[in-house]
Length: 100
Image (cartoon, rainbow, N blue to C red; front, side, top):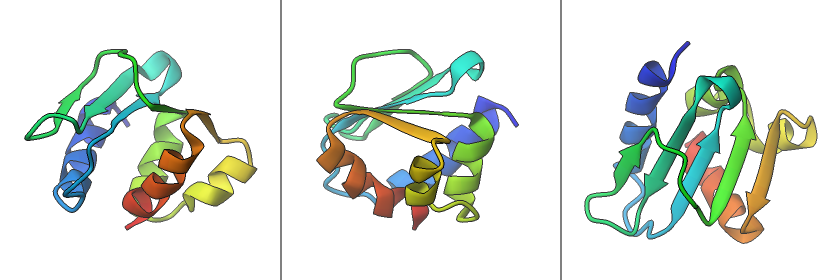
């Protein structure tokens, strides 16, 4: 599993997230970063570490499982496989976006 295999999955989910005007950072540790800037049209997705309203720290395998629907984001959070820094309300909104 690499960032290159995760990015298309995120891009596909972003097509269903119209009206998403926020910034999100996925911190995947040694595997790198994925930054989504929804304040731009179309949303910009990069592999750079940038400031964001909410940051999700997790492993690339956990993120892949969340995107595939085999891991519930809330359960991953409770099991400490997913850590959230920043705007918790925005993180809760993204919960539905990530698992849909």
